[in-house]
Length: 247
Image (cartoon, rainbow, N blue to C red; front, top):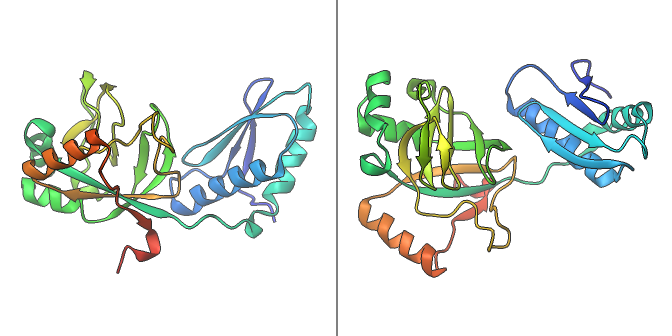
């Protein structure tokens, strides 16, 4: 059955946006992921690319292969059967994180904005599993949901020209990790020594939308030990099914 909240928006002469709602929520994002899988499995003729976001799916297609009306009908038919689509079981990837100091130069600012101590901010930030709603901005950059509002902090007024790979940041009510060196304007509270994106690894990105990240506080010595293992290729990433996270 089609959802009355779903909108089909024309995005130029060769793209459609399937919008599932106005809010950022696990339920709406689940429908986005379900539609992404359904379209992919159906092998709809003319599809060029699919881009899932927080609450919508961008469908780029070749109108010479599948005209707009036919594409719209095909997508609406798939949406009507989304209840039958089973999403893959999510995994949790642990992100060992050294908070504060040179690795988290904005931690004190977050403390000042929230009125909390460093220990409290770290405890709150690392106390839950974060759902990966979407990937974007840079290869493997995870947009995460579920951060505690108590540590929400506005992004920097002036973005940094360079942010180190593995930097953990906060921007508004979002938190995320920079998978590679890049510019950016998030408040940096820590850094992980692991590689979230590695083009030489298979797969290059260890997580997908619908999975979870869990930040695990570590000290300086452990950071250096893990960094050495990562560089040597001997580090064992902690990736496990979400259903086992509570064991």
